[in-house]
Length: 257
Image (tube, rainbow, N blue to C red; front, side, top):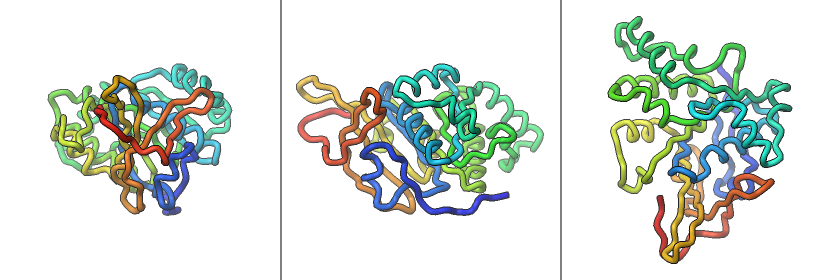
C-alpha cells in the first residue's frame, strides 16, 4: 500500500533547516555528496537519530561499515541507537554490494534484460516499512557493478522508482573527489544519478590559502522547496554532531574538494 504524501519535514540538525524555506519535501531522493572526510556518514547518522526521535522509521543501509561501528559513531555523540532499534524505529543493516549486483543480474536474466524488474527484495528488508532510507554509499554499489554501467543504471532507475512509489524519503551518499556539478570528475553514471535525484546536498572540504582547513555545506538542488543557495560553514562538534552555521558564508581565498 502506497503511503500518502505528507508535506515537508525538519531535520533538526542545528542550522541546517535554516537553509530551507519550509523543509525537506517528503518522498524526495536526495544525494549527499562530498569528498573523503567531509562528514557525509555522520550527517546521515545525525539525520537518522533526529528523525527517529520524531517518530519516523529509518533504515540505514551500509555497504561499508559494520552495524556495531555505526552504533559506536552515534554513541560517541551521546545518541542512543539501541533505544530506537528496540522501539522498531531504526534499523542499521550492513549489505554486501556484490550480493546486490548478483541479485540484480539474476533478476535481469529472469526478466530477459527488461528494465522493469522488481528490486524490492534487493532493497528493503521484509517486515520493515521505513519513512526514511539512508544508503551509504552509492560509490560502493557502483564499484560492485564495475564494467557494467548499464546494469548499474538499471538498478538506480528502479531504486528511485521504488522509493518514489512508496513516498519514501531517501538520502544517498556518494563519494566524489571533486564536486561533479562544478565541472570536474563527471561520469555517465554520476550524471545519471544526479539527473534522477530530487535534491543534492554537497559537503565540502575547504582549504584556505593560508593552509587552514574547514568544512562547508551547500543545498545545491531541492525540487519542491525554496532553498538558500549559499555555501556556508559546517563543523563536527563534540557531543553535538553535525552543525551548520547559516550566517557564516565562506569568504576569502579557498579551494573546495
